[in-house]
Image 1 (cartoon, one colour):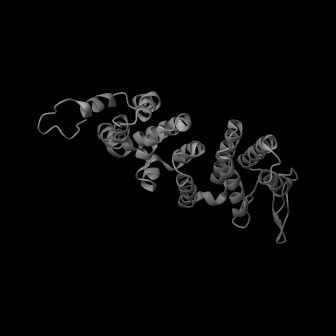
Image 2 (cartoon, helix red, strand yellow):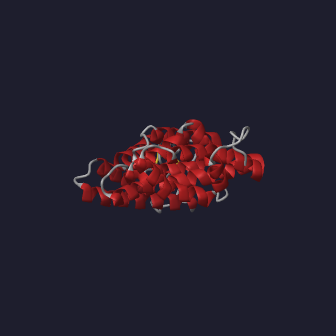
Image 3 (cartoon, one colour):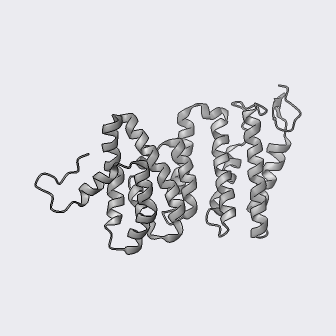
Length: 273
């Protein structure tokens, strides 16, 4: 089939793949540089160029300048694995601007994967995203760099899916506030998780029933942390997590007060919303 000469489009002709500058030249070369940086300054700049390259790829796909088919994947599995490995290797980089770049790269990569022809089968793309989420969850709650990517995946997969994959995620998230270094990144993720969980509960159980379901899942981890004997954990939860909790559901304050009410009468041991 005939392709454009703009350097973006790859096609097959007579069974032979026509290579392109963007996919077969620039992208692999940038990955080589990212995998073998000479120093932290070089690493940041080459990651910035990789991010620009992926942005151009996304733009070309949205403009239908890249034609994909079942026989041609412009970013094959091997290349996707390389990009993800580059992201993983830089999630804990000491330079915050480097971490921000790999977060942008990760988000662009997910957008590109969602645009490709094979993502039209929702189960296949969901399975792919779940596999990535599993890798991130295995990094543990002390990995600050994992929270922005987890937030991106939560928006795509849904909070309930994330909690099904990691039933203790809310308790782990609350307990992670013991570490000052992760608090800001953790709070951004917590807001995404709580908002999506609330919305999913609304859709499944209506507003009133949804709030009951939502509070039953999100309040115990936070309140458990607030009752902790570790002062730093209590302080950070009060500073970071509690305002987000009340922003997402301001009426949850009454449910929290019910938890800590002094001398509950018989039969009031179970929280009512």
